[in-house]
Image 1 (spheres, rainbow, N blue to C red):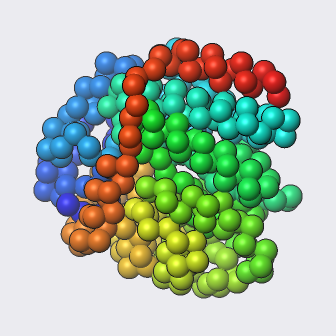
Image 2 (cartoon, helix red, strand yellow; image 1 turned 90 degrees about the vertical axis):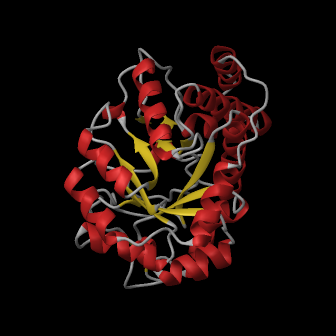
Length: 334
């Protein structure tokens, strides 16, 4: 197994993709809207990926946050609200907001599980500040760290109850970035004391099974390297100060915040301390370059991967529509 999570080019596994994944078995896969046509097609695709891996618990990721970040869309799948809706309710009725977030995440998890998807890249724990780029925006659970942590915890609990692994992101915090890391490298010049606000929700949820790094430079922590490729940030801050010991994945290697060849970027994030690198585009040439460049997954990374995939504790199945009705009734209080 190689320490990479790969995307796919389309709704079916291609011949070249299958051959590459057989030769270099990845740690997991990630799906995007281009891979999602209808429920039957996704179930067939996830079944094929699981058969190829030889196990049912292979990580098959998706970004199904709700709001503008949703790979599964109507008419085949329901719309889920953005995180801001829960933040608005929290201002009036915190307990109701936590219940609504939990019901919502449980509904998302039930939707994903029935499709064979095992991991959702949710919750977003970034704490936005005034003047920051809107790339986080309504994806945040508010602007106060304790509130963000509480709603993030409720979301993780809902995912777990629905049998799906959650991923906290973007550790150690993307909320101060004044640029979109998809397009350029953000540089945050806040002091270490100011950054404590950004770290707080991740510290509260340090027991999460998986986390995704931020392609952001924090000059107070490491002025020369963004978090994804910084041993200082990963070892001293993420593993040390925050105390996160779960599976740590990079954000997408294809984002413009990272420079160099795909082989260089993959090796750099792994050398810095990421357990796995994330490559989303499904571009075959890029995947082959990465697969041929990285070593086998390390024993500690494999252990963290196995522990993360064993994290869900699914309770009795619940109807997605009924969960959504309970969520909507609570959100109506906002």
